[in-house]
Structure formats: structure tokens, C-alpha cells
Length: 361
Image (cartoon, rainbow, N blue to C red; front, side):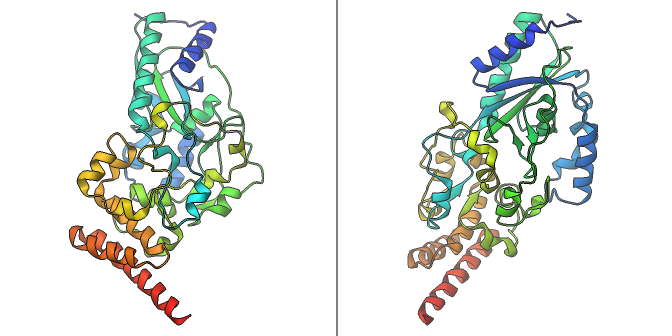
């Protein structure tokens, strides 16, 4: 069946159905991304993607939806809040170096499967309304410029920290897309940029990863270092990481627009295993079996046990001197890979330096 036209009223029905499925907003955009394609190529040329080779692997398919999915005419973009209610304050955790700080998006269940399933339900509903059509659903998957598409759809603007910001919802939300060959009416227009002269996100970044407004050097970003980077974390960034063991929310935390954000009502995004304020030594004591069990259904599981230990070792090195920390590091060392051992050795050196400094006082 070929659908030749869709009435404007259908978009309102589609938005209503999206809200019923747990999305806070749905908009439809064209597929034109010429400006964003130029920006992406310049960013890649500067090497700011680090070891994320997948960012360059697919050529223009990332910025040209109809090359990735032939026949695509429109992109349906959605957002879903994720900030977990009743979670321990991030500022409070950062001030307690014996605790581990984990990015708030990863405290509950992995969003990939949940949002894909909801988008599939949305597409199924659409087919009951207009008949068969071509489509493909995405959420932070495949070569898709989802923030650029969401910006074009009017879900917000890309801020100086490179996250999408909505005037009434801040930035604590996930994005998802449906590429479709339906000639849907364009539902809205881009909102325009409202960062103004504010550079709070640039000033707060612990590793100065936001090298200029709207440009993040991923190689310096703690989220990249703790999640994407598989090799040794450069020594120059280790102290600045503090107790951040999976991702970093500092740039979102200080964004003035997040005073308008709302916590999620999605049960699957609630905090699991007390990960909003976990004790570093407790996490470091997990065996690989315990890690896999406790992180089942979590985005954190994707980095693997050894990378998890690598990150925690740095946080333990940054913590105040403690004989318990030294003992834990020494005990774990024989059980891990050479890569993790190198980070444990760094942490031990930091702990011993603090011991010596305390003795001289």
C-alpha cells in the first residue's frame, strides 16, 4: 500500500499515542541535515572523536537518513525523561570521595531496549491507522545524528555542552527516532538557540573537554574516558575524574535550563542496587559474576568487568588515604588484567603519597 497524503490531524493523534507510551514529546522533521553534516566532518577532521571510529565509519549515512534507510522522507523524533526521582543529590555524592558517582541515565534499566520497544508499539499503532509503510526505529543506535534531528524537529537546541536542551524540560531525557517513508506533515520548527552568553557548562567541566562553545573534545570527556575508551586512561585526566566512575553529569548539573526539568515517572528508570550513592570499596569487591548479575539489564554492563574495575581504581586513588583502600587494591591486583593493574598501581602510588604527606604534617 502506498500512502500519498496524511492529514495534519494525524500528527495530533500520533502525539497523543506517544504520550500514552511514556514519551513526553513527539515531533516530525524533514531529513535535511546539511549544516550538521558539515559540522560533523569538521569535528571528525580534528580527531575529537578519539577511538570512537564508528562515528566516521559510515560516511554520509549518518547525516543523510535516506542513504541509511532508502526511501526515508520524514523523521519522527521523541524524548523521554530519565532523571530518577528520589535519587541522592549528585553534588552530595561528588563531595564524598569514598562514594562512586554514576551518570544518572545509567542508574536504572538500559534505555535502549525500552525505548525501541515503545517506538515499535508506536509504529504498530500507526500501521493500524494508515496501513503498511516503510520505517525503522532507533535510539542511540546505528549511524543516526539524533540530536541534530531532534533539534530540527523542535525538541530543543544543541547546547554548548553538545546535549539537547528544551526550554521547559532541560536536558535530562533520552531521544528516539522513527525513519519513515510516510509523507507526514512537518509538525513544528526549530526552537532556536537559547544558551546566550552562559558558559557554565564550559567552566564546570573537570577536564576542560568543551574546548569551545558547542565543541566537545571527546578525548578529554569523562564520559568518553570511563565508557568509550577501552585502553589506559591518560594520567593527565585521572585526578580530575575524582570519584566519577561511569559517565559525568557536571555540564548538565549546572545548566540553568535544568531548573525546569522533571523527574521521570518511568518505573524502569528508578535507581537499582543503590547505584546513586554506592561505596567504592563495595563495588570494587564485586566478583565478575556479581558484576554481571547486578548489572543485568543495565547500560553499565556493556563496558565489562575489567573496565569497571579500571574506573573504580582511579576513584580509589583519588580518595583520601585509607589502609582499607590500599588493602583492597593490593588484594585485587593479582586477579585483573595488566591494563587494570597499571591503574591499580597508579592508585596505590597516590594513596602512599597521601600517607607520606599526612606523616609530614
